[in-house]
Length: 360
Image (tube, rainbow, N blue to C red):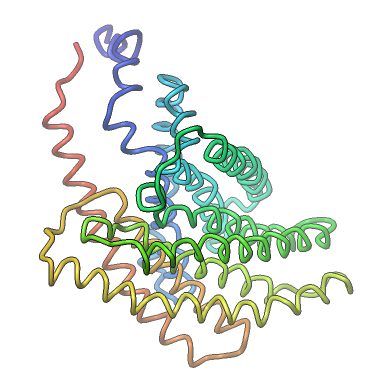
């Protein structure tokens, strides 16, 4: 017992907290929560409850586990975490903490579990959004030495959109339960529109990166799928807002904006899918890059699951039943991607445990 305690205190704890593998897990590890949560939500929306419930339960364990890893790393080396937040290359990945919190709350609402905690999760997500978004943008702006667009920009920058839209989605679940829903619906609409504006800003730079800067096979990594996932979650936010009743005349007027914009976001998400498939097929089939597990592969699972869930909700909100088979088809793609990523994660964990010596 004394030897076990010693392994989690003093120098042993410092070694764990500052280890390279822990830095590789968080904050990007919150993408696992995002991916698992949205696939569970899509399963529930499409009637696959036997699939959705195990994923939901697994995510309830994953969320605190990743938070524990994040807090361990923060306690061990806060300066390194702060420097990473201010970096162009990795700073945006901290926003997965916001998105994961929002997705978890939306998952609880969808499965009607512990709905009393939804306002607390929304509050936590909002605080994290303000701290991390402005911390990242301010740090990247004030950084004295800056990378080129080729070096510093990747699809993870669109997490500024995903995090913002996650607030809108969770807000749409919390608002009907509030004593005064009008202000919260207004704020959810504001987040929905702000996310759209941020997408236009970032995707313009990404399009420049794609078209005018050389793109090697190694440059095509999982986060580029967030090009699609960011507008897919905007579609989900818009669909959720379209389904809300008109609590207030002024809010009802604002809700009318959600309809055409949601169609625009769904069309944009659909537009990205063929291009991304072509690019990644070129990487793996033409350039024959070996397929190896990496944490950023969860950034492929999340957009696929989000496209399925958002299409299902938009189909219901807009009265377009012919979209539902599309949602159903993409659900199986998302589930397959989740399964492959989960297998890769387990194998990577086993290799890590077998190679890491146990502290005395």
